[in-house]
Length: 188
Image (tube, rainbow, N blue to C red; front, side):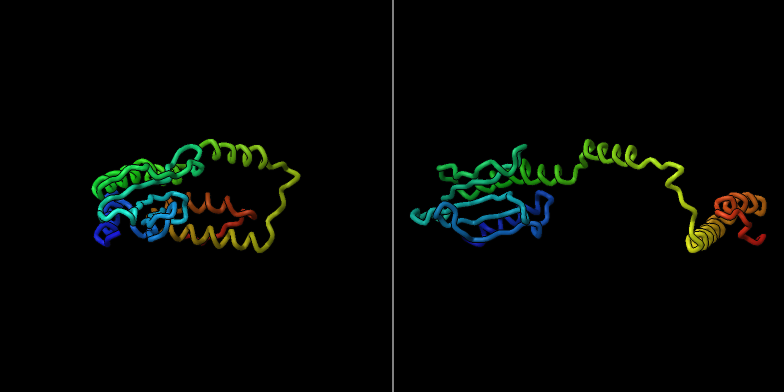
């Protein structure tokens, strides 16, 4: 296949809002014929353009592609058996990008709400805390808590500049969080 034809596919990928870096293109054989194969990364999604070497015309092609469907990637890929100009192949390629590649990417990044709710159920039902399972904080954990609360207090002072009255309320509430409930802070 001529380089200008190959470059046309490159440009169509960009026009579709996709990155050519996410694709792999190679000259190979498909059903024993010379082919230009464009794949979406390591996925089974492929668009195959075949040029029958028996035909003298450089722009007489056939094509095949992998479709994204519910039983993906089990759908077999077959050539159409017809002959197309490069412009017709480009139209088919644009349709493949829109109907299969973009659809596949959208499905890949869409969260599975049913799987999430199952996961959340497991966490909620399997993650109940009973009084028997609770343990006291270690001394190291208590020190870390005090340091973290002090850092949090400093962020409040730096970012919000509370009044003296507001600082007393903040200190009272932060001191309540400390396991030993001793005042941590000196008046400001």
